[in-house]
Length: 258
Length: 258
Image 1 (spheres, each protein chain N blue to C red):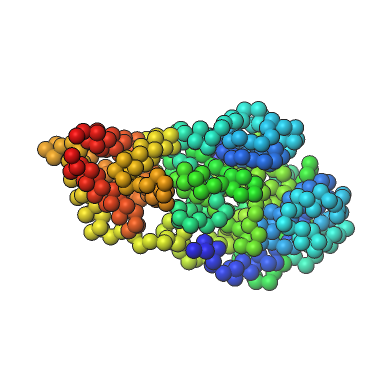
Image 2 (image 1 turned 120 degrees about the vertical axis):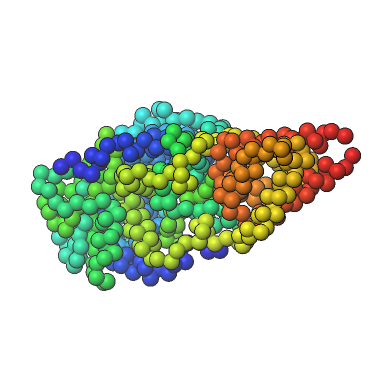
């Protein structure tokens, strides 16, 4: 009776490309517990953005049999570095925001992940223990995932959140072992743009908005957030991102001309 | 904008009657972490069968804001006492057993719980950290729940298992509650742009692309189609459409200036 997991690990191939990104984690025990949670669900890639205390004996102790994930964890300086090559970036968000952003529950998140073109790199981003992700960090995500919780006490431990998201991915992969529909309902002819490509696009876009006096750098308000949100929602492919870049470059050129 | 949890807690009334039973837990930290996990998902009733060390400061520390569940936890001498009044008893089981027993995954477990006659008492039973539930204990359960896991490393922490099961109950209760969610998962603060507004936007956009020599009107190829597809996929709201229009107007203005 070797259980329900027999349905080959093939269905899980998209999950191979999922990394968990923990941002500014304070307690090394949470890093270890997250590694254990990940490994139980078959995930391997842990990225730590400026962890306060790592490597750490506490992390190792809490990882139990998952210390290999700690050994192979990548430590980076910025969220940008952690997600640059990712085609889908999902940020865990407990709170509602002033600026609404596409929001999914863990099950919907799993469907999105499973429907990405195969080989796409995917990041699940989790924030600080007390305060989660900043608005700036959340604005780098294609969508936000909210774990449904008790409105009176919604403070999941960060490793527990990793456990729930990883479980939901595994569970959904298993449930939908039948091939999920492709992301936009049809097979797509171009790979999705990566977060790094989009970040360059947004930087360029912002510069152009300043140059044409549309954006006041001293009072930017939510303008760029709204541009980001709009474009991220569409999940541009590489050609589309290049078209937008090309357009901006061409505007630059015309602005320089007398 | 108070998020997806508005759908009254009514749908969760069956969950009121769910207790978590932890059998012979060794580490008090796991009891505390389980209490926290329970409370985040809206559960309150914790029953401890011969815990090795309870009450305990470690449990209290790990419970974070859920110490009220520890205060109200019931400590009993036997599993029998813990489940006597229950109409459904589900035992967590990681291993396959010599004697096959009805086995569900967490999602199926949730469906079973939700479909019980209202007012039925329900127990989720979790075993020892190292060895789980004994065959005798498992034989007291109506069915067993197995959390799908990595076949090479399936050792979930017991509090993580509580988190997953509690999450699945809450998630399923919410999913079966009907009311379709708003389009992007959150109530949106702006109405969607109309097709007419978007058409004006695309006309304007195209004109700008011609003016900056990015689009050759005699050989337009698929450029504008790709712009349309990208923006339409994002389903812009009115403010977003206006931002793009404003940007284009500002480019016009700068192009006219010497």
